[in-house]
Image 1 (cartoon, rainbow, N blue to C red):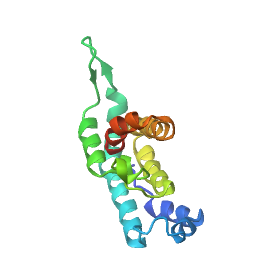
Image 2: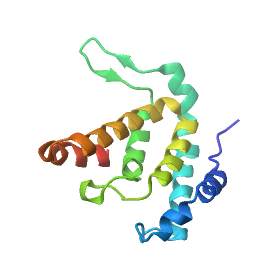
Image 3: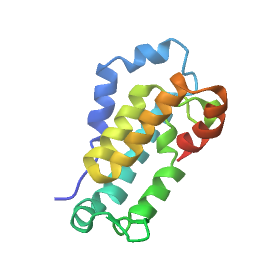
Length: 155
């Protein structure tokens, strides 16, 4: 059975969790309701149309370390990652000064929920990058942040 991203359920969960209260603070003035819905809809399209079809074939094929030290990923993963980067999905919760969208973390959680549900193998790579960005943003020197954060945030 094909994966259908639960966009409506995620939107409902964000509403129940109080995203409207976060938005009411004025901290995220650039996130009107129609833009939020558009973000979730587009993330759902990526998850359902690009990532989910690679899930089972990617598990069967797997990633392989080659004798020269390079890694070969499952067919389609490089193109899927390119689509992920072009959509800006890595950058959703991060500071715009580093290339992020500066949106509430809850929105990012909804996006990444769809990514992981559609294809956990694919989703693990950006998940690790999220952690690296958070660590560098909190504990990196200004030089480290300037060097690494723009690259990590934008994919």
